[in-house]
Length: 265
Image 1 (cartoon, rainbow, N blue to C red):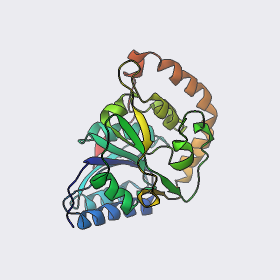
Image 2 (spheres, rainbow, N blue to C red):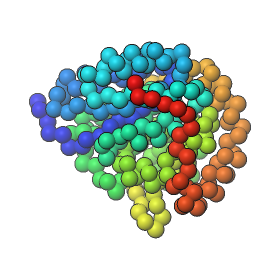
Image 3 (cartoon, helix red, strand yellow):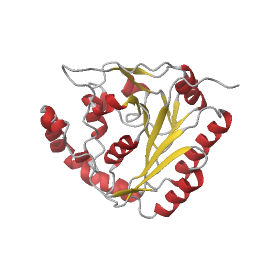
Image 4 (tube, rainbow, N blue to C red):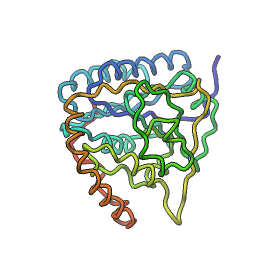
């Protein structure tokens, strides 16, 4: 059955060596295009500098780029966890207004794929988080006071957003100061909106289980994890710096958005 597309959006995901996850993502969107040929999936995938997997990443992009709308971005220097800068890069290259930002271990269910593109009327004054089914639950206590609706802490993945580019850039983009720390998602969440100019509300995409996202075990490279554990001790002063800086709109919206060389695949 041919359905009329309701929402045109781009999936933006970052990758760091999880070969099976990347291949399975490509196969899923290829299968969706075969099933719903009136809607070509749009993906931007960014390699977060993983050196050993660079050839594999480029080969997967080359194999699948003719099957749907696929853009590969290769960050040329491995500095460990740098997903925040990679997301900024992906959004800069995005051609659609709506985006789904997620990690490579987050998989749309078929129900979510159809609902998001064919059935759900997205409100540009809102942003959304999909309900998530996690193979390995994450510690979400840091969101308890940040999320008065209880959506982010209890029902979703903490760094998966469906939002417009205007909403994204209302934060000034992700802070690359959190390179190696993995706290930037919380600051991004609290930074959405331009006080006195425009605010956005948020909600679950759907509370139905058949429209959820499936979050697999990340299977990150050991170097990625070791570097992250060392830098976690630096989180508190970085958080304090970012929160003070973001009270000044001039500095918030003129911060550096990426910090490493990159190229299109």
